[in-house]
Image (cartoon, rainbow, N blue to C red; front, top):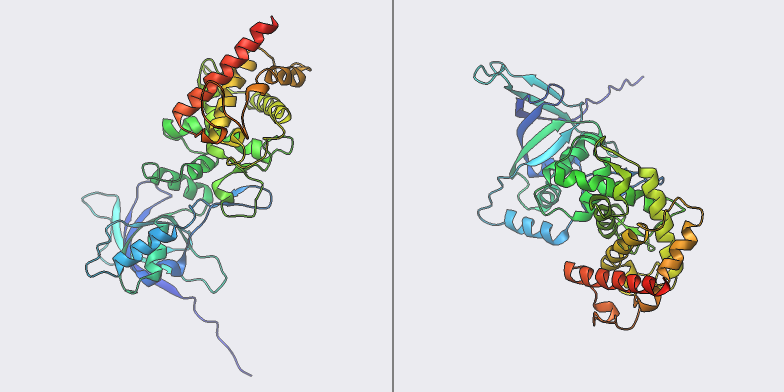
Length: 384
């Protein structure tokens, strides 16, 4: 009888400095070789599962940027000072080395050996790259396989904590705005004011895109669906988020009354109902312009969404969306401006721009918004 003994799991063992900032989430600082980085670390790219739930958090890889890093790494004198930041599974093991007990001078750090398991083919890896995705991919392609790479890592088994750190780390860098916008609703911990103010609008944008009763159902382009077969997505999430945020934060906005600033509460159900009723009326008023890509319809362009959002503030300031006849009444208000709109062809009167010359810049958004509101007010006075 042949007796086989199970093979010992492969590991990588490195010298590391452990820093305790928070008891349950120690930091580790260590060094790896270029060829080791992706051997045990995964890149968690942002996407959606079959139920539409957001998974992952990384931006799509940028080939040109990666190639530039590869060329630099293969040059004569490459310097790579910025560490790659990783989230480590609790499967890693740290032990103090002899004489490496906690340093008496600071009381929060110690040195030792960090053991990281290397999984078998097809098995989940014990680390995820939170910051440095492009650098990690470049290192895997570089000729110098032994190039030393600084690593900063923290223990985090949950995607929630990894995503939280990803947003914070990339907050001051040129991170794609759409990616940050989509990730914000998934971050549970307190955010800086500049990001916190976009969290609710981004959550509402999610609902508009996923609710089958929404006129925007499946039409919103998000970072998680970039490059997918979601051919129906035509309007950017940032345009919708900007529209909602402006209405929520301006005292003259139609969505502003749904906020109880004193209690810090927001009536999200009321906001969704108002948005669904108004934008459904917009779709029914302009069926020939709805659902087309922005190069064929400026209604689905960021400028069109924001301008119609400002008109929403005027119309819903008069029409209560809770009324039974609200959908019909809102359509009648929109019909006052419909003859003057040039979403898919022609020239906007008074503005002087051809329909496809309208861009999502403040000047054009203000011109288009002011024109629609002015036409609307004149038409209403004519009916009085």
